[in-house]
Image (tube, rainbow, N blue to C red):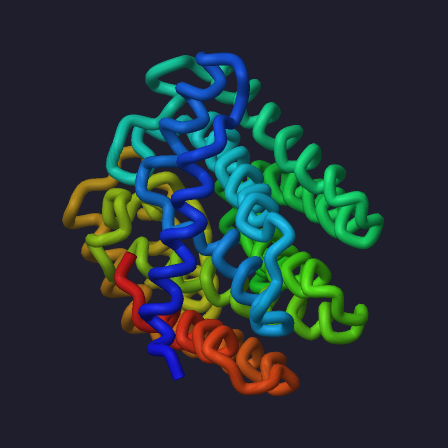
Length: 321
C-alpha cells in the first residue's frame, strides 16, 4: 500500500497545480489581493480533505474533483481576510497582512468576492445536497465571525461557549470539506454523514491545537503569545482559570487584561497556566477529538486514502505549526 505521506504530497501537488492554473477573477486587483493570501504558504488542508474523502469512497473519481475542492480554500481565505480586519492584524503567515497593504475596505470586499466565488463553484455542480451544505456552512462561518467578536476580551467565557466559537470558526468548514467530498463520490447520506462527523472532530482538534501552539511553539508563523497579548481567552486559559487558586486566577486575569505585555509577563502567565494544567488538559481534549474522529472512519474499506486520513489525524497531535 502506498505510503500515506507520499500520497498526501501527491494530492496536494495536484491541488496546487489546479489552483495555479485557475485565475480567481478577471479583475487584476482582485487577483492580486486574493493570490497574495492564497499563495502565502497555506497547507491546503480543506481541499485535501475533500479530495481524500471522495477517493476513500470512490478511488477512480474524476469529475473536476480538484477544481471543486478549491471552493474550500476560497472560503477559508475569505475568513482569513475578514479576521485580519476584525483583529487589526499586522501579519499573516509571516508576511504583512493584506489589510496593511490595501486597506480594510478592499480586504473585506475581496473576502466577500471569494465567498461568492466559492458559492458559484458549488452551484455549478447542480447538486442540491452539496449546495445546501455549502450555504449552511457559509452561514455558520459568518455567525462564527460575529461570535468571536462578541467574546473578545470575555474572560468569563465557558468551555462550551468556546467550543461553539471554534466549531463555527474552524470545524464547520473542515466538516463540510469531508462531507462534500463524500457526496461527490455518490454515496448515500449516511456514509457522507460519517465523514462529516470525522471532519467535525478533526476540525475541533485542529483549532484546539492551534490555540495551544500559541503558547508552546515558536514555529506557528505568528508571534508566540500573540493570542494572549490580544486578550483572547482560549482553552488553555479556560482550564487554568477553572483550577487556579484565587490569587493565581486574579494574577492571570490581570496579565490577560494588560495592554502592554512584556516577555516577563507572558512567562509568568505561562507558568500559571502550566501549573494549573491548562496545557495538559488542552492537549488531552485535542487527543479526545482525534480519537473520536478516527472512530468515524471505521466504516471505510481499506485503502491508501483511508490511511492518509488516519495519518493526518495523528499528525495533528504532533504538529509544530
